[in-house]
Image 1 (cartoon, rainbow, N blue to C red):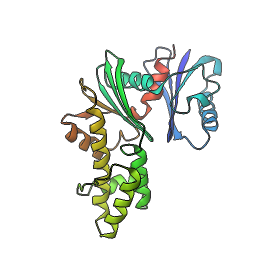
Image 2: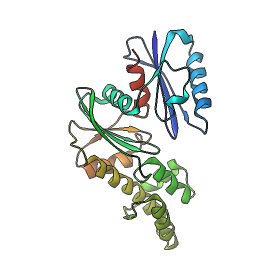
Image 3: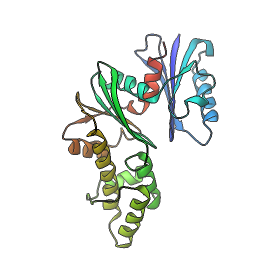
Image 4: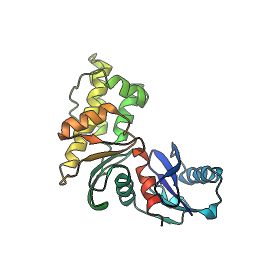
Length: 251
């Protein structure tokens, strides 16, 4: 029996296939969630079967916003549980996990590999990936281009606490001739500040571990480490943490 985890988030869908002992990842898939979670789920199933295994040989667990849209899943689990388990697999059993997602940011406290507490920012897109996506779109940039500019910018302050007002603030800065690099750097700093505020609502310990789509952003990791006053670790597979956790919990 093999184990697969499918994590359909608000922006991206992730899937992993793990071996019988659940100590090795045999395959990974990343794709946009798209507008129809059921179509995305079907594409994930086709990918799993393309690896040369029959459906009967794979136990599938779904998580994320779109988990109810995976009709063939053997069971579903909450994203908090799965992200915690996946982060423990990648970074250790005693962690403060920071997951910056497309539409929410989660801080999960792990003790001995178990979730003992968490907090989510799900009332406003400020402090999430959506905030940076909106800012990049306003400046006519893709996210990779946006982060590339931010690496060379000065950290200006964007004071608005709301994405809509922050967008207006950025338009004003553009009108004043503020360099795009500085605006991009300021936007990243704004997200980091809001994430740090969310972290402060709990009692972090055991070291910080970043999961989610920004785990490859050296700028965001550096700024977050500086703001929190402690190193923020991550992993190349950190964006798959939810799917990994689902697979691990499949037995």
